[in-house]
Image (tube, rainbow, N blue to C red; front, side):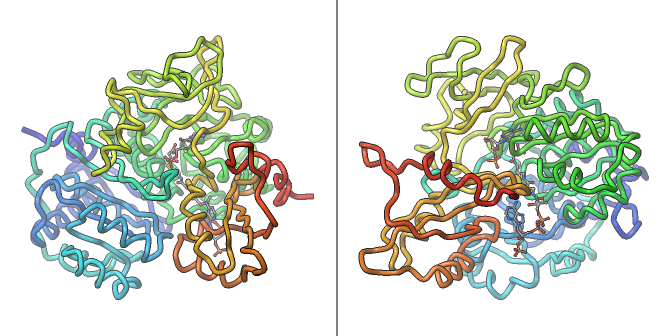
Length: 505
Ligand code: MLC
Ligand code: AMP
């Protein structure tokens, strides 16, 4: 027996004194040190009474210890559930309850708020702070630095990632060991990663991009990462000379291009720049090549499927496209009404099937059935076409979704809250272009007859309930919303009307 995820990503490097994490304070953590810490954490968690298959919900800042928690979960056969650090207590309560987490790991700053929630739900709670201290670390330091890896099979669950939905309720995407491993292997090969690579890692580690793409690729190839707490332009520019590759959302690249210190010389030695999670404007791709001589490699994926397509490493990286389906991934364009495949070149919904595709949404069989067909094809909600050369282009989405700086925001969740506010008859939340975040959130309110909603008070309520990145950048009050003859709100008209609201003049 074995544990494929742990063995391949981590176990191979046990005892190796090779560098794994380069930190901003100049310290380097080796594979051996990292794995010893992970083993201590696994011992500490098992000592708390957790059993294989239990969920560990973690809302913690990015740190080597936070990453060790991921490794510890893999080694102990636990399901890792990383959560965005921006989530509010309301949002967290839902995730903890819905997942049935047996252990909640949070920053000490919010222990007082979350402890009653965990208590009510019968979950253990431990702290892990941004500097690596906390009750979990305290328990771990006294534990043995080896841990007998728990047997798992490829089809066993390894992680839950919550993703919002068009109904406003978040769904836990269940990812298996094989989902994660197959993608890590494919991407490492396709993008030619080796143990010599040094990845500049400035993404959060609670999402697919930062954890399952960037980190897993480095893990599986035995390379190292410059592990930064967040994207900080000065740090990126200072550390780029020590890296061989970087991965980011388009905002990373537009911010770099907006800085005169980001020159051809600075990027000369780099092997690869990868972009994803949101559309990279063709003009950014072109500007980047003009500035640095590098063509950004754009790829396309999502929480439920990991990565689906990628531009080629060696062939032409075509601006405005997301490249070809990855080896092992089948992609088809279908008619949204009938589900029938469309002729090559026609625009339709994108469906994918492969070892990367998740197992379904946790305890939501109807939602799973609505998106994951019995034959294994997942209906992505993205709309696109495949050109004569096989390149996939995404032209839009048939899910009502806003992507701001790489974070997904489902308008329904915000609308439900706005509709409940005093003086509000109804609301519409739309995404409009934003020079830094790609898209940003605009909220439109329709007052109840004779009433005037207090937009400041409403923003305060939104602030307490929803993560910062979901807050409308502005709230407008309109007499009515445009509707079609069926009575459906025509968000496309609103998007067109307000498309220049945040554009530089
Ligand atoms: C931060 N803020 C955001 C935001 N990020 N608001 C909207 N959208 C975002 N993405 C808030 C901050 O809280 C702050 O609030 C204000 O906006 C300005 O912050 P900032 O300092 O400019 O932001 P910064 O911290 O620099 O973060 C921006 C960012 C970050 C783009 C670097 O959001 C980021 O790292 N995004 C990556 C997201 C990601 O990894 N997505 C992958 C999902 S996986 P205040 O209070 O100061 O006003 C996926 C699948 C796939 O999609 O294919 O990969
Ligand atoms: P998430 O649910 O956070 O995993 O986000 C997945 C969604 O991000 C996809 O369904 C796409 O809509 C979008 N996305 C990811 N990569 C790209 C890309 N390269 N171009 C356009 N959209 C993308």
